[in-house]
Length: 319
Image 1 (cartoon, helix red, strand yellow):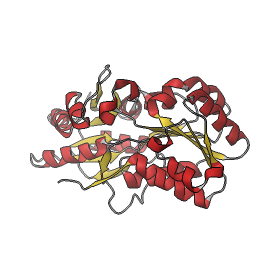
Image 2 (tube, helix red, strand yellow):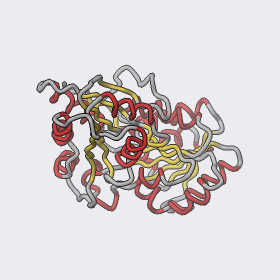
Image 3 (cartoon, helix red, strand yellow):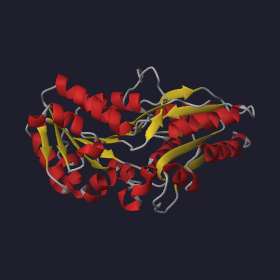
């Protein structure tokens, strides 16, 4: 089944942020000279007195955001994911996480699907870094409607949060709106009792395509949209481990430190099961067309389906 194409998650973020700005006068934005790319410009045009531009200086960007939060504002601070998390990690650690300030960090242009911009612009370690910050909530929405819901959710959440958005247009997972979105609660977007595919971001659409392909072989794949990496939905993971033969985790991120690592840790503690992992394997990508990069580095529905086939042939009992 071909899913209809929706907006890029960065576009949905910009629209949701503008709406929130009209509802809550305490929301402000801080940007690092890329607001036309992060789409924070939508807010800045509507509420220029609440929009602060610090230039290409991510460490200072975080400091300004922390100061605004300490004064009672709700700052959304945004830049490319790799610049925000890699360049300013120490400031996020000491100025935001340590005092547990109410700063909302947005990393745009995440993953290898930004394409021609190349490896220096590709955030492939950002989720892992964000999860390492004590007290941070970490969210990776799968489509425009999930992004709108996630933006509202982190705005209402008291405490620091990281929201990951992307550059390319994404298939619509929730064409009627993501009404069941809750931080820390996975959404089951497809039923199945043979194998479970857990994904987030653009990989949810890939997981659904893989499930369609597997269904032709009488393999029923459950698909979970694990939009919140931290806090993780341990109950959904345990149910998947108990009720299906194993779990495939798919993410547009390094296979170490991201969603797969956290799902594996959860499963190992609660109900060990067979697992496979789809992600970027210990390498940087390169400049190229998004679809070509996803194919080359194994982030496709075909790769997910192959892993699911392996698991479906295994015996359930690990003992």
